[in-house]
Length: 248
Image 1 (cartoon, rainbow, N blue to C red):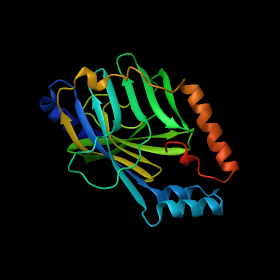
Image 2: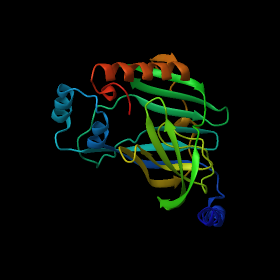
Image 3: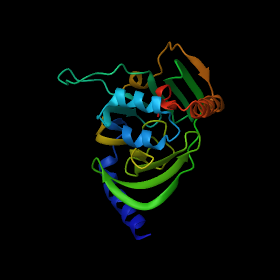
Image 4: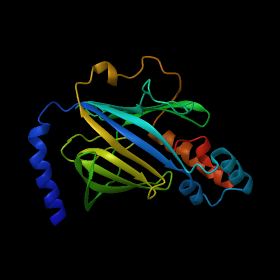
């Protein structure tokens, strides 16, 4: 309880500086630790393990920048555009646009999976979070820990949220906490998504709008869960990696 009280006092002390309109952008670094991910998939065939080794070699991790744009009513999360002076290899990125209407409590997830683009449209349901008695600093903001579980993919999710950014939002498919999620961790570090910079700035309405035309198959939450569950089940039976065709 002492840690929670300290956390609340720190958040209250920082509120005057956050009195400006609640809008801006968060830049995250998303890191995949492939050795950890594939070591958990014990059902993989030898052929599949060889395929993974040929694909990744000794490069254990892959990093990419993501961005979350937000105001008090909406959020939009996707890949961060590369700056002109940034070098390095650029992957052919799959479709991945995550929209949240916080005012109407609805979601639109535009994701490429199972060989085609799916548009998941439904009500916005918060995970069953459990707030823990731990705090740490992320990108200059004091954050509190919360945990939940993705029962569809069998993943343990750890989040660190900042009460001084009083918006129930976050990266990837996660929100539902009393503050902005600035760090996510899947299965004790298989994937980490960590805020590098929080920039409070005006966000134009156009930056948060859904594309006028999106080609893809529209499904709801229940259909999404059925698709993912069936794909993982079939992949286990076939001793192959389900995440070649599915976002981790």
